[in-house]
Image (cartoon, one colour):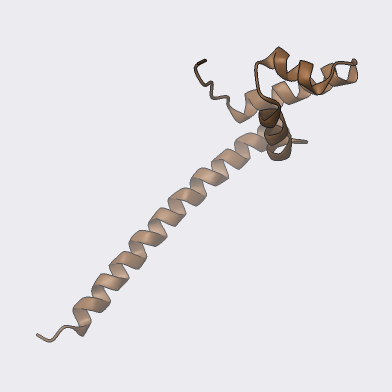
Length: 93
């Protein structure tokens, strides 16, 4: 089994642009996927996620996703602290 390759959003966008050129030149989607060494389902997923994006848009999306994950983590910690304080306040001393 071949080793799985992870590509950056910038690499994916470049492959999509190159693939669109190959499709316009007359190759089929299957041939383009074979050229890139990916499955057709991967091509379809890339199109749905990154179709029409530019490299800087993908970088901005990645930054926003990481910021969102950090904010979710902070919110979860704050909710946990709040629950612990509430529990302490309800106990009889």
